[in-house]
Image (cartoon, rainbow, N blue to C red; front, side):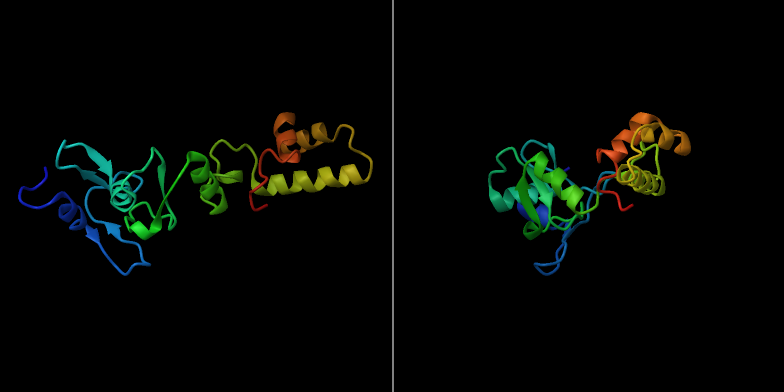
Length: 164
């Protein structure tokens, strides 16, 4: 419950471990399981993610955009580390910064990175040698995977960004 007599902004910053302008400013109060802080607004007692409140102070209007961390630290509320963007921008950040579950890191993946590497290598050899016919079936049998998974790997739909 918000304390009386202290402004909402002062109450907010009292819950932050401020460092210099380039370092992460960590949220010290309540956080969710992913490390994002939560702040209760004084006026309507609703909660808002702490980094969104910091961005509100910086940008005034968030224009229904996502608040993205340039530091990839969910507990950071340093306004210098917060930028606005779309869900597409956020997904692009995740991929560029290797935070996405690609390759064998994806819990739904049926193949390992080593298997994908071997599949791609053997597929490319089959194309060069003119023995492409039946290669998907042969690779599926060898790796005990479905032909569809082999196709997705060889066509670059899966494992294209994985370090294989």
